[in-house]
Image 1: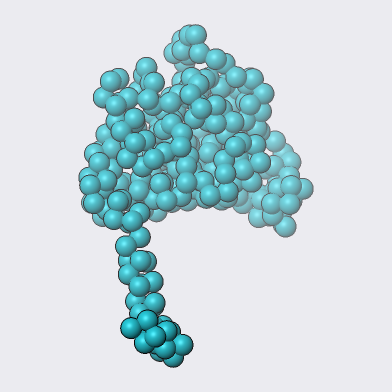
Image 2: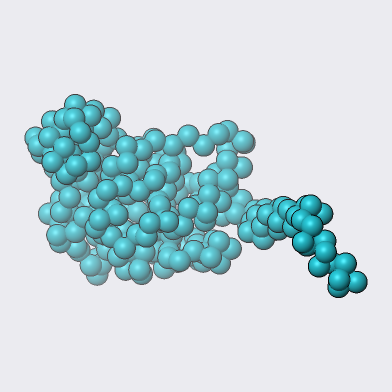
Length: 262
């Protein structure tokens, strides 16, 4: 666990993350449910993730989950008819046609009904077990480096992500990385932006824990040159200097001032 915790802390330092990396453990047996961990009730999955980001070790199950769409994604409960038909999304003003909403749910990546018993979420910096999935929520520039790190460890293969701008944390950042064992990025969604403290310039991604160590090593490599160089904005500064020089050459008033100064 020490290496896991150290890598998580180091990543936070390198990128200046504003919150913890989150580990998500899928529990398929009641006997595996951790003891002395807060069991949440009346929480959406995105709100559970928010609590873990702020340092808590928490468990969410079929009884505690409040979001019907997330409950269906994890196989806790069937999708309600109102959502399945797309009518619910029309009512929320998310889509303008029921068929659009219906298609969005039909293509949702889900776990089999009744198999998953609970989800254990915790900050990686204080992890006591290895998770199945790592979820990161922060500013888009910081998440960009995770994507580049993933590209590095996958030999340059382009990062392909999928989202419906719906269920960003539960599906995009959790079930897709778990079921498909792939890195996946999201733009956030209506639900998590309404229900959590995620800011307008933040979004979320997830990836399988099996890639965590390699991604940590890749981020360490990127921190040596690419990250500080990009953040320095030297190329922008050069452009501004060039533009200032061009103005001084073509602006008669500026030239006149220069002569008076001389």
